[in-house]
Amino acid sequence: MKITDSRALGEAIRKRRKELRYTQSDLASFSGLSVSFISNLENGKPTCEIAKAIYVIQALGMDFVLEKRG
Image (tube, rainbow, N blue to C red; front, side, top):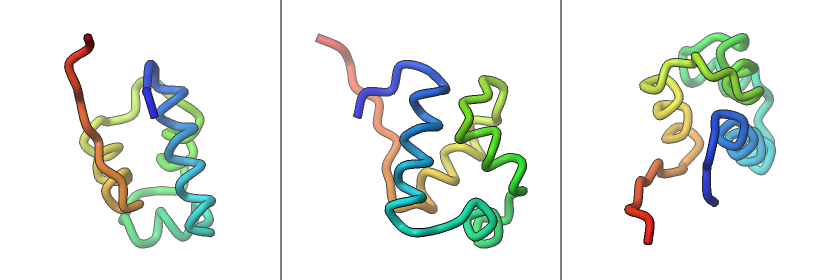
């Protein structure tokens, strides 16, 4: 999936969380982050901390990969 902004990243994270049948509370619980952070991340808040976002991505069994265009 091509991620072009924080909103698209949040949508991808939400989709994966729901595929796994986790609630935001479940994800917050096992990641050690707050439900409000998970909510902000899924809603595309542009000021979410990148390190925490990457941690959530990994916790959901996903990889964050950057590729050169073209």
